[in-house]
Length: 307
Picture 1 (cartoon, rainbow, N blue to C red):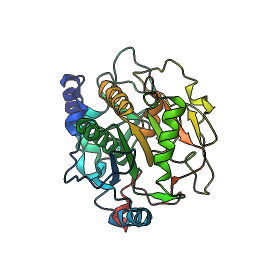
Picture 2 (picture 1 turned 90 degrees about the vertical axis):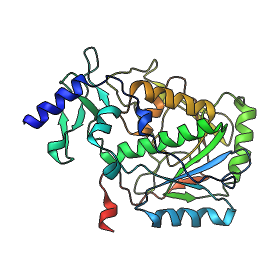
Picture 3 (picture 1 turned 30 degrees about the vertical axis):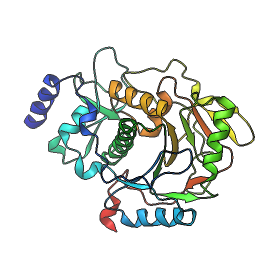
């Protein structure tokens, strides 16, 4: 109990908005081969502990001559400290919405402590049940976006290590041309390479609501309902689940980075993106690159330990 009191006092007197970018991971050993037409760079996010998933992803892409850059994912279970979590999450303050929250304290040996609702001012919270692994996943994506933005890329393709190729991925280059012509080259931020995420049965799972943050309310809380047909190949959306294959423009990189640097991490990354002000999201109408719906995941638990 004394340890928790000391830890909470440290939270209260620590900087209110310590920068999350100090915990971004560097991309090392990049080369010019990780690209294709209309895409400046291709990132494949992969945990060091999951070489088999990396190999499977490479085998999926190899027939098409596509060579992604392997980004060593942030392993939240092993690489993030309590001090890091304190800086990354949302410090609860007066005037914030009291949503369900989860905190982590040293004496609890990494186990989450849930608050229904949040109630301790100055304490760092994440969304209810957000795990170390999910926080690491979010940091992996942000690290990639920061690297791409610093590198000056205009368009990147970010994929996770559980992709499934449905059609020739080079189709994406043509779809980017289509989207540029249909809405304007500077008027879209993200293009998802499948229609929607899938459940374990392989059925599409549409997003039915926006998740809540304690420190931010979207201007249009009904934006998730947006479903606008652009043409037979493309549609505009307000929200969706899954970040396993996304084409992101420079404008989208900046919007996502600015939002989370300002408001800090709270939700899983796919639930944060729809809240980003002005984010313009699109999907294909027929899957090009999707995900293995039964792929192993380490977000909820470090399941790689049981391989």
